[in-house]
Amino acid sequence: MGMRRARAAAVVSPALTWVVAGYTVTGGGTLMLGGRMGDLLGR
Image 1 (tube, rainbow, N blue to C red):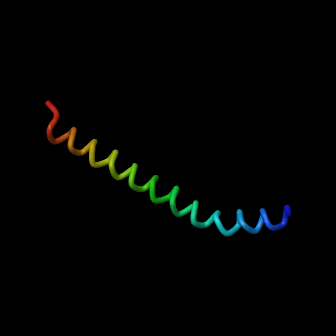
Image 2: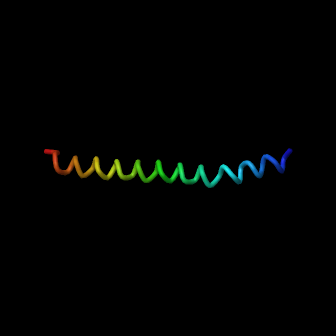
Image 3: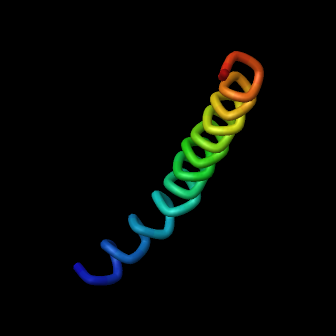
């Protein structure tokens, strides 16, 4: 039972890594875009 669970975690782990990386890049890009918009449109 324990070995089966370890294999399942190993299969899910790379997909989870890509999902987390995707959200991180998207969030960072949104912050940079928002900062740039604030610079251009701010008073």
